[in-house]
Image (cartoon, rainbow, N blue to C red; front, side, top):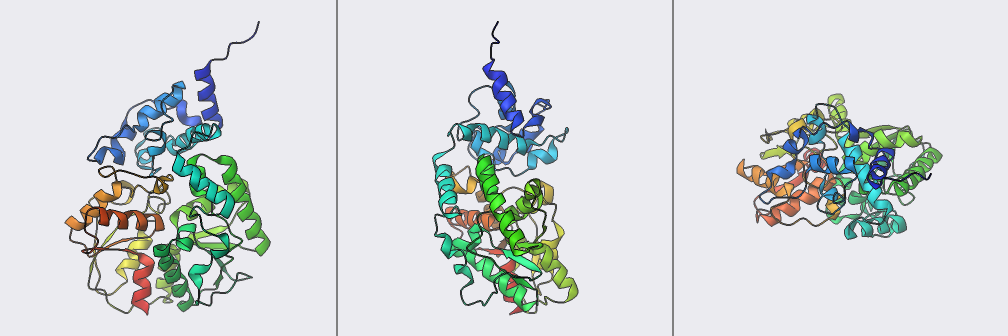
Length: 385
């Protein structure tokens, strides 16, 4: 007698196999949805993380739509609040992997994957131009220096974010840090690819970079992006990529203590710090960015009402930076408005994704001429010149 296959059980089992083992542990308490930033938006969103887990658990159709499954920014608020410590983001990633295998990912994200597959970056830019940001900086190619400076795709190819890469590199030079860059042979770290659900593509990118880094003798890596930092530190080891990884803010904080970075130029401005999710909540690096800002003479540091583990996402994570979001549903608009309400002069962060999202939001609320968005690296670079 042949066995009848239950479609719903099959979908649930595939989600579990792809990394969503915790999906059956969820007790549907709703704390995840209660802490989700989507609840703070002016317009109602169809996204509910509690409902999505429930649907995936039963194998029900409907969770795979763009405005449900791909609405999650993977900010991690739900993970912090979960009483059962369920790895909710792993469940989201697993569910996206199921959809990706059928080719059902959103159109915008298909274009991103296509660019990464053909050029090694999501910006549809020629891979041979990966080091264009470093023009005239006299940065050596990595040979046997202490650190590899890995510049994320956004800081390598996006005109605005290239200023971040240049600021970090010049500050490291002035501090006497031994570092080099590899450049054109590098590929995207794969963080966004994995969040899209393209597991095979992520593995391919990671294995390429791991082999490249090992071939060059890399032991320590400085990252410009919290997303690259998290991926190298937490996900590359799964594939044999065991490197010492440090985000530039951690390194800056250490260099300040050693006196290798000495901010001298004052900045008589009111500065508010936006916490990048993958630097703060995901990686628990809360103090280093604040220590750096406090070291700049004359700066007046202020905080958002909710900070650290409770901070609100900019909405650029989980590959959402590559998707269109209508007005009234942008987390970054809320953050930009709160910064304006607190009369900040500078809205400061430490993530290229956050820079893109927050600058766009200031334009959306017509405040881009009243407040500037800056990366911490830019303020330090200006202060030590």
